[in-house]
Each structure stands twice: as C-alpha cells, then as structure tokens.
Image (cartoon, rainbow, N blue to C red):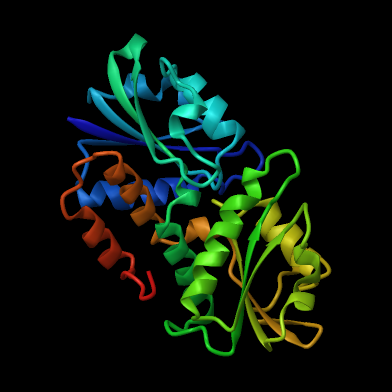
Length: 291
C-alpha cells in the first residue's frame, strides 16, 4: 500500500486557508492513485505530528503544499514527522531544486519519501499561466498583456524570492506574454508600484500564494491601489493609473495545482498510473507549449 500526505500551513485566523488543500486532496482521491490520501496542517487539525499514525500504508509520499524551501520545509515538517537522519543537505538544492529524499519514520515503522515543495516544481509554471487564463476568461491570453508574478519575499529567507523569479523567467522564455515581471510584498521590486514596471495596457497579477487570506485579499489589492478598503471589494479588471489590472487571487486555489502534487509524488517514485493525465483532463489542464 502507498499513501499520499499533503502537508500545509493552515491558519487559526483565516477560516478558508485550508480549503485548497482539501479540494486538491479530494481531486487526487477521485483519481485513485493512492490507497490513502491525508491532509495535515501546522496551524490546524489534523496535525503534522499525528498524521503518520493515521495511515495503514508502510510507504508514504509527503508533499509540502508550500511555495518555497525554507524554515517549514527544512525544519518544522521533518521534525514533526520525526524523520530519522534528515538533513537539508540531502536535497542538494540551491533553493529551487529540492526533489525527494527517502527516510524512515522510526516510531511508526514507515518509509517516507519526503518531497520538495510544490511551489518550486516546474509544473507550477503551468498553474500560474492557467490562473491568468482563468481570471481573464481567455485560454489564449498573452499577446498585448503583461504578467506579474507576486510573492511575499523576505530578507530573512533568500529562497522566498527564488521560486517567484524561477517561474517568472520560465514564463518569460515562452514568449507568450509581452512582459513578465516578478514583484514582491516585502522586498524590491514591490507590487505597490505595479504599473511602473509595465508598458502594457492590460496586466494580469497572479500571487504565488497557496491560499487566499490576509495578504491576497487585503494587503495586495490595497497596496496596488485596486481599492481603498478591501471590505468594499474591487473590479476585475480594475483600473490603476490608466492600466487595467486583472487580479487573480492566490494561485493555490487553481484546480490544476492537484497535478503538481501528483507530479511531485511521481517524481519520488509513487506509482500513480495514468492519474496525472486524468487529473489534468478533469481540471482543464493540458501540457503547455514552450517547455
């Protein structure tokens, strides 16, 4: 038997924070690729610490529903899962290359394939583009449009920006959008000045966040000038300094993200059969040209 465990942050303060995790887990369950699929959270129940005890499977694939490598993926999750012999060096990553390491969770006698976060997987590039298609309602969106990929950013963790810059460059190389830029909340270049970085009349703004919460539903719309008060909402598209802004909300709410979770597990050796193809079909995703 093999199990998939999706580990995410969750929140005591934002009641919808966990919903994308549950939605993607349901999609994967329906695909039937694993004998067991579980969700676990840092700030909600069920917790990281207990989730392995709920499984009958002896082989477990753990995929972090996090954007970047850092404190949670390198310290909190391995510690709470009690992974014997864990060391971040085992990923041999420069911040975007973490793939998989196989370890034992001794106290529960399980083999754990601990995967890199979804946010740095190549397939996430497709999800960002799909988010742009969803918010504009145009499956061919690109020509005449700019695209801003927005991350939190923090000087305390250089890897926080690397994932944003990695996908921004991959999308830029495809040549689909007239302009593609990486912007941030807490470091330069800042999303507050979004219109300064584009010449296009239309700009799609996609936050590379797992779930909608304070940052994506309050801070970013107000910082960009889409609204003076998030509680009154904003138009899509909205106009800021003469530029139409198509604000997409968190990329993690896009159904195609279930595909990235599956691909992470498959890369680590999970036998997922044709589940990836079926999930892509179910979520409206198809491999994009350019890779």
